[in-house]
Length: 226
Image 1 (cartoon, rainbow, N blue to C red):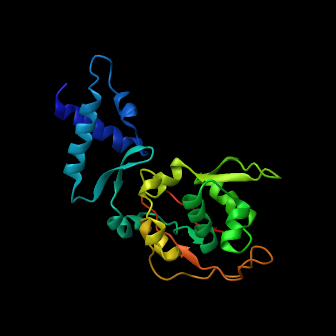
Image 2: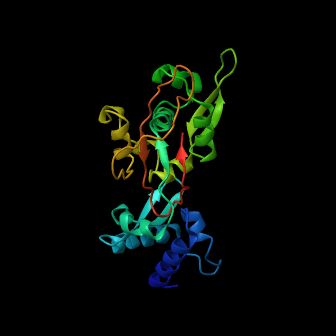
Image 3: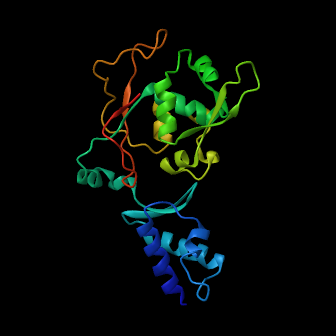
């Protein structure tokens, strides 16, 4: 099989998949009598990346494999195809997610100690439902509290290959910097959530809501995430 045919097949498979694919998954689409070498797959990926350079789409590597996606610069136009509004994320949720990412494995109590306020059950539930955070074990202390860590889905969502791609804490000054460093487009100003009450007694009584414009390949619900 010629190199150009292999490239056409890999490009078609990546476009049709709608999700990241590993080299092994790309190899699996070829029959036994036509299967290329692994290094040919990698060379083809590199060739496609060069072809996509400067175009409206790009081929990127994330934690789960390789993915073709629309460049974030195109998001303002692509987003107009959908009637759904971007998801809203409270500052409390983003701070909690950042602490899990940087301090994992970490317990809910440790998150509360660092933030100085209680962490509502809804925040942890939302992070787990979105498959950004999971329980990775239990701390060997009285009560055996659950320890939380991030997932591959978290890395894929933020276009990260691994935790090493996160900016260092020295580079971050506040939650807005975290949003920027995680390649989140933050159009407009932060908006207060109408009628929002404190999550629990002792928690902050005011939470900024950050509107997150996500990559076009990741559908989001029209909702506010606490």
